[in-house]
Figure 1: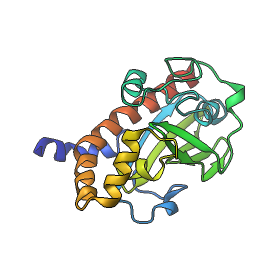
Figure 2: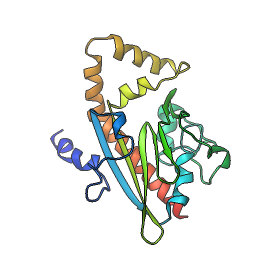
Figure 3: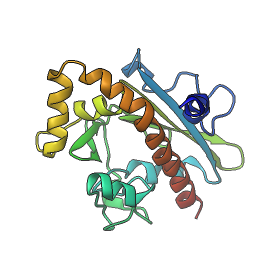
Figure 4: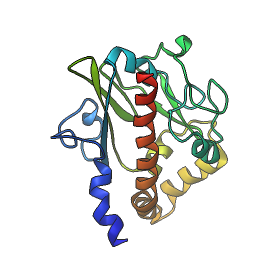
Length: 211
């Protein structure tokens, strides 16, 4: 446990440089006092216009998140536009995303698009930021800023969410001490799992945009 707590600060800012982990980003205002925050980043050898189409089509039942598909299928029974794996090409029919749309994250949970500026940033549950670098390169930054993974999932649960998700929502709202337990689960299980999956997103987008 001590080793994890010592490693956790580096985990929460994986790949960042300079002030990226702490500087204000679009969407920060939606959670002025977050219980959890992470910022991770990667450099991509492609301009933002080539990276953006991969980001805007993300989502379960859409293009996926380009990360560990087997984990997503095991946890959420995830399926994608190309079947059992995240997209390997740009899908024009998934490019028309706009503010107010809902991005499916799996298990009946959706994130509403609150901000969107093409080739620059998308805010939908998390903050996906693109910054141009010299020589047609891009800095891709992802920030999660919120109350925690379990409570965020409950807030984003749709009316047709699976029974497990609805039961979790009921417990967090009605059972004394459940929220405190959820924070502990987020800290010791949610954070490392989120790190594992999010680094996969960064690397997955990089691989696709550069190919």
